[in-house]
Amino acid sequence: MDKKILLNESDIPTHWYNIVADMPNKPRPPLNPKTGQPAGPDDLSPIFPMGLIQQEVSAEQYIEIPDQVREIYKLWRPAPLFRATGLEKMLDTPAKIYYKYEGVSPSGSHKPNTAVPQAYYNKQEGVKNITTETGAGQWGTALAFACSQFGLNCEVYMVRISYDQKPYRKVMMNTFGAEVFPSPSDRTQAGRNILAEDPETSGSLGIAISEAIERAVMDEQTKYSLGSVLNHVLLHQTIIGQETIKQLEYAGDYPDVVVAPLGGGSNFAGISFPFIKNNLTDGKATRFVAVEPASCPKLTKGKFMYDHGDSAGYTPLLPMYTLGHNFKPAAIHAGGLRYHGASVLCSQLLKDELIEAVALQQLECFEAGVLFAKAEGIISAPEATHAVAQVIREANQAKEEGTEKTILFNLCGHGFVDMLAYEDYFAGKLSDHTISDELLESNIRQIESLQPE
Image (tube, rainbow, N blue to C red; front, side, top):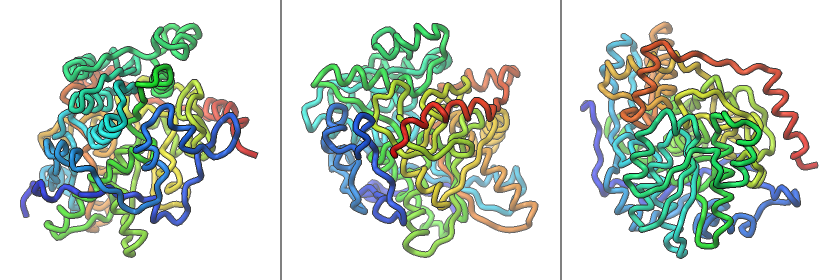
């Protein structure tokens, strides 16, 4: 078979897949933190356009992709699927390894898959400005690109450590027309409060979300956009898995295990949800492994509770695996994975034991990223190296057991503007991080009062 499996433009999915329709246990509703009652459209309308709110609460199995969105998707979709023959040979494994490569998008990651429709629905409802947060910068870059396609203004709050570590992500956002501010900033009350408490803070996604939401609610022509976690965001990413199913059909193969990093959940959901559907409805028995950093282990060490999605408590309470919204993760280079909670949908699937989760240290991940670059010629984003590291574990296990299996993973983005991370790795400046049980317990205690009676 060919190493690269391509599709035609006509193969771009016409609908997004909504896993809520097939979940055996439907996710619990988000709650209004003031009333403790389920949050409805009125609670979300100050920050989201109604088109996205309707998708957020939908239980329809498939939702049609607007023609204008599909036309913009054609700039980079369908994305290629590769057989990792170089990696297979280097590992001397009987396993077959495939990777879906999302680094071909304008921003170099999977994020435009949801940024484009989010910008579209905002434009449809007359919104002029969009605010957002970004960790490592992939999401901010994607939204900046999407806003440029629809003539919208874009204001990005970038986690301070990533703002300092990844200056060229900021330049990419500026090139697409966005304004970028390090978070926490003095532009919002949430930011000023954090800076007063800790002027040297490295920031967090939770803080940046608070700032972006605060800016959005101050102006009726401004809405907020989120790059992960929420149902409609994960919905948009399912074009990844749908394309991959068709590509594997051409290859005459099907995965025994699907692997992807998980920060908020959009990356993992994008590749896995269409395959999980086949487990739920067609009797398939694929394993699904979400990979998180050991320094931010919400799936493996967090607790399934209601919690805010941001540090200031502006968002509805979401039922998710969380480390507590006040958790401040270590300043690892995989900024897109430094989030305290997991999406409601991924959390429910883990709770129901339909997916698995592992936490890996960053040194193992960078080692895997270097090996992959030598084998396959692609320098992976720090986030993507987490998937590569787990794939290597799976392939080595197959070798030890002498069993054949097919491994699929989402190579969610390239690392061409993350070279400082690799420079620090080669210079021995990176270290592993372990979170103490005492710190985790302290953070969880802080949100116990938020639980419904």
